Length: 466
Ligand code: SAH
Image (cartoon, rainbow, N blue to C red; front, side, top):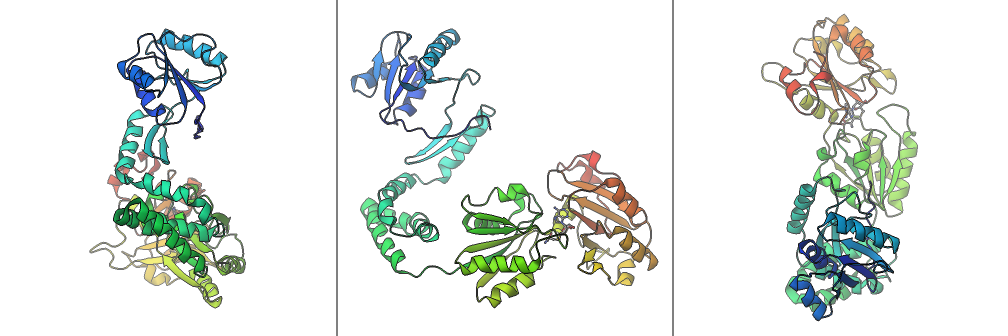
């Protein structure tokens, strides 16, 4: 991040601008929305600038800027549309101690003005550090369409009520009150009864919120999917937006944790499948402790929480504590892996059933119905198979599986560093060793990557060792 976004209080502060043409007008239109004391230096000002001067919206000085003109100014804009004049102005304004912006000249500017969506007092600022103005405009247009025009009115009324609402204890209760106003009763009250209606609704709402008992805590067991944040469900997104506490596994991608509500308490449970981890009892105790305290706990698990997630043990602990819970399903690693291989988990004429297996469990390498698995056409998604690959290979071949049975290894499925590796049962353990896997990997037994998948944009062809 090369530019740090802040909102500067401009009421009563001095802002100077040099220039009188179209660029100056564009900047002045936004600046005049603030309560800054704006002074414009222009030898040939546009008529609009003269008119603003006449009605006292700004002060116009009909000459080029000189040394000392930007003294005590917080911001100075060079909008002359003339490189030499802007450079001269920048130098003198900087010497006067102002922060300088030159219109359309990122390099010589000390700050930049973002694209703005204005629902005063709600202001959304969009910046791309000059990299993509088209993108900024598109985001602005999308936000303009998405944010109701009257959002500002609602926020202004809300702002005037903030002191009154301070009688609610900070944190959950206060947040619930405001969420109720902005997303529940407020918009309707404003529509039906205008500003008076919205104001009256706030008082009624406050009464209701001060007399109701604090909401009980709850636990959501949420699937975070295989890693790509776009593969989160809408429900998972909402859970991340509203959680008080998020207890997550080690496998959860940082991009997903970034989406969590800023005030949420993020706790790593350090689990990775059956790998080294915080003991399960301790995780159970942690969940229970927070839900008992009235928190909305999100227990965030990679993929789908019901697949190799030790979900039942956690549910039982929550239930034993008399607390409520629900499960938000997610996209499991097998679904993401097979999508990247460009194949189906089931396929007419090949396999009408498929199995989920784990390479190892708490007792070590997992035993399975090897005979059934060794039958031609069998398909299985094998989780946590890295360490047990040689064992799997030996058992399957001993029970008659063909050594040329296709196997696809997908490491970091759906993530930026995804790799799809084509192998056969006979070469599996050597291929795994050669691949030097570092991320989580899923083994698709009985499935070869579709060759055409090499042309898919998710990963580069060089990552496929066919
Ligand atoms: N609940 C998870 C599985 C947890 S067990 C789910 O539904 O996906 C952990 C194992 O899942 C890892 O050892 C690996 O085999 C697999 N896994 C999880 N995320 C993965 C990913 N992005 N790519 C490949 N395998 C993954």
